[in-house]
Length: 202
Image (cartoon, rainbow, N blue to C red):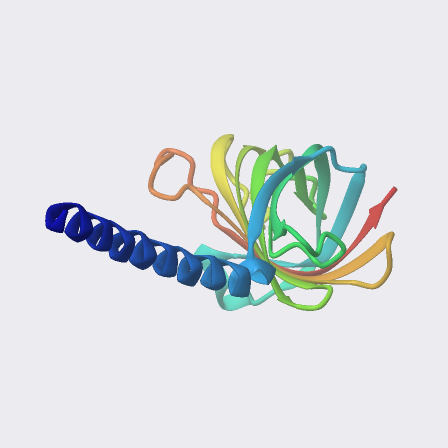
């Protein structure tokens, strides 16, 4: 009888402790429910962007920046993003996009390729983005001092600060850099661009 009472009391105390611990964990989870996030893959509406700016050849940068350089982005139709579970209408915390890139100077020397863009929410409707891409460069007009002097693959880097004006329009300030990245050493293309962009979402 004593043994039975001991087992009963011991079991009751253990189960009560587990229940208290579970209640505490449930309370903590409930408090953090509003912070719960989720990654989703979405079909993205068509979006195009044009960036107009000034360029310089990094190797002979003493000449400074000169106009004009043009960069075009066509966003591929999918987007991977991080969002709040219970607040789907809020701005995405993180967006990952793939883009088709066309880039050329006023001389016609161009680069074309694909990039991956990572956009981080800074404040409402405003994003700070970094895009890295692989582009094929082609000097149509040689000896032009725009930094695209060799045919071949180069890396295409872009830093951008963008603000969504409306559902369809977005403005951005951009810094772009083309280089071999010490990977394609036989292709010595080194170009810097600063520019302003506008994007339209269909």
